[in-house]
Image 1: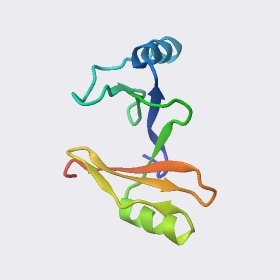
Image 2 (image 1 turned 90 degrees about the vertical axis):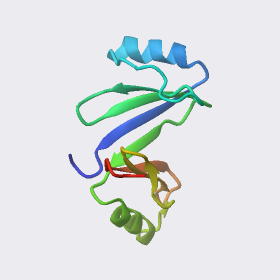
Image 3 (image 1 turned 45 degrees about the vertical axis):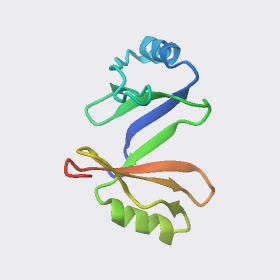
Length: 118
C-alpha cells in the first residue's frame, strides 16, 4: 500500500438508511449491520485496501483517512511542517489513528494498521 493512500472514508448522514441506499445504488457498496450498539456505524469494503462508513451526524464534510506505515513519524512530520496532529489513538485489534489539520486548516486523519493496537 502506498503511503498516503486513502484507506477509509466516513460519511455523516441525518438518515443513515437513506444514505446507505444512495451509496449502495450509485457504487454498489454493500454495507454491513451497525458495528456498535452505541451508534449506528455501518461499514462497506470498497477495495482490498479501502472502506467506507456511514454514521449519524451533520452532513457536509466527510472524514478521509490516509495510510501511513509509521504513524509516529507522520505525526512528527505534520507538526514539524506547521500542521496539527492529535496523539495517536487505538482502534483495538485494527490499528491507530490521529486527527490532523494541514497548514490551511483542512482536517484529515492518518491511519496505521496494526492488529496489536489497543
